[in-house]
Length: 194
Image 1 (cartoon, rainbow, N blue to C red):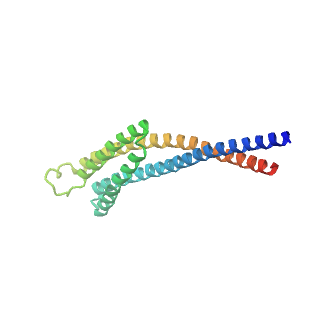
Image 2 (cartoon, rainbow, N blue to C red):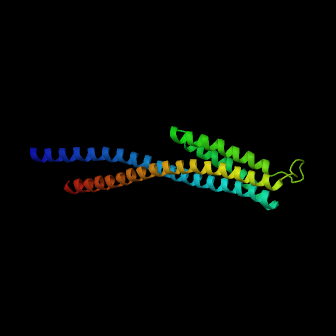
Image 3 (cartoon, rainbow, N blue to C red):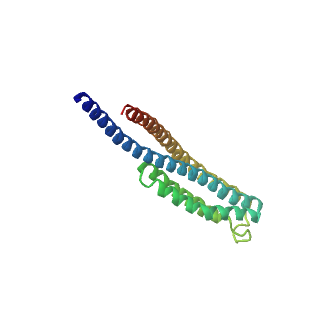
């Protein structure tokens, strides 16, 4: 009889321990899942920023070269959306110092790109643009390309860092799933023994 009581106490202790372990593992899984989702959003916003920066550059450069008003619409559309994309990225990376520094630098460059591109889109009959207009257009287009190159470097750094974090988080997430399965089947085994 004593052996039977000891056996049930051991099974009960193992079951309670596995329950606690399972609870902690579930919390870890929820946290890593949240962080994985956050990383995907950051990657998506980074891609969106790259696209919008290219649209700003292309819109202003095309307008400089062709004087086509459709290029201004492309520029204005991108400028209208880039602020919210930057705000979202800034909010998502606010608690990580290295990413925050990159995003702060990126914000400055994007604002400079928008402001300098805005100067490019002026009516061509403005005084002072008559002389060497083609030379001015080439200089402005190159300046925008320089901003975009700097923006691309920062975006690549954000992407690289976030991809590394994503891989680490997905590994932790998968580990939590494996542990859950192990605990679940062990618990089923204990219940079967009971």
